Length: 338
Ligand SMILES: NC(=O)c1ccc[n+]([C@@H]2O[C@H](COP(=O)([O-])OP(=O)(O)OC[C@H]3O[C@@H](n4cnc5c(N)ncnc54)[C@H](O)[C@@H]3O)[C@@H](O)[C@H]2O)c1
Image (cartoon, rainbow, N blue to C red; front, side, top):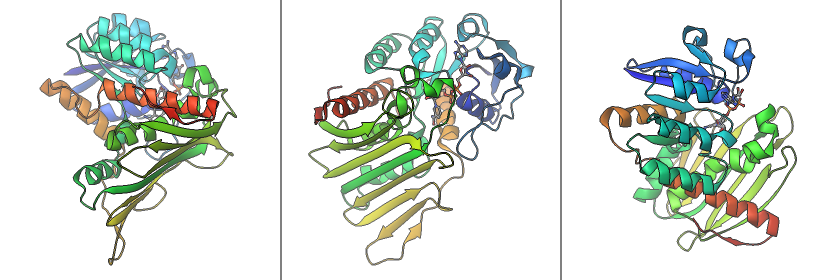
């Protein structure tokens, strides 16, 4: 039996708890939250995509801690699952690996690229598994895109545009730019990370953006400059007005086809090929979170490293995001150094 303790009962902790319930050899042993209402179950988090934070797990059935530090120190667990505010990730991942626990830590890996590099270095020196939960790597339709880019099944990639926008989620953590890093770090990093996974570290970035809600960058548009692909652009932000639902899209032009993903479509992924009728690509119904956690657990069971998502690559994503921030602030093209 794999014994898990989940730290943070917000939207992500609640989603992770739901998913662990699908695995017969996993037992949730403990949960932690600093907010007494969340810890008692009186206040339940909700999500912005169907299927997130269903809240089916009965937290009253397990040990409850008011601080993640106590859970990590005291609970009889194999795995610490960290779904805490981003500014706390570095500290609690370090505590968990010092206690010889396996770790699944929500994205972004931590608050700064320097912290991320530190974690990658320290985790390399221990035997336990530490995986950043970069869910887009596992998201149905996005894993398809990664395969299409790598295999060149439709030719080389010529242009790729990504867009992830929503109204601000609210809540103390998401209102504080120091804790969450604004939409640039919290939301847009999904696309930055995915672009890095598909196309590698860009040579430089040109970004524009602004601050509206958190004091950090809340809406960004970035061009990622590569020698081998002419156009890669991503927009991310949470400055849409109230009622604007979460929107997640990409359009990728290959030499012989266009792939278009829109979460709002009934069939989100459509492939357009020259001379053929457009066709929807059939996708699994689950979200990326289910596949990401299944992969993490499979790696634990087999003792293998998590090669699909590494700490080093999560640290690269943070370094690219920091170059984007610098580009906005200096109004210039910024070289990316990882
Ligand atoms: N993968 C994704 O798609 C995705 C989506 C949303 C959020 N996230 C990430 O997940 C993390 C959590 O986000 P969220 O939306 O669940 O946030 P949230 O603010 O809703 O939940 C965080 C919880 O942690 C608790 N907490 C704070 N300090 C604590 C401590 N010391 N000990 C125990 N509990 C403590 C808070 O009381 C709160 O309930 C963030 O890093 C965020 O970026 C990832």
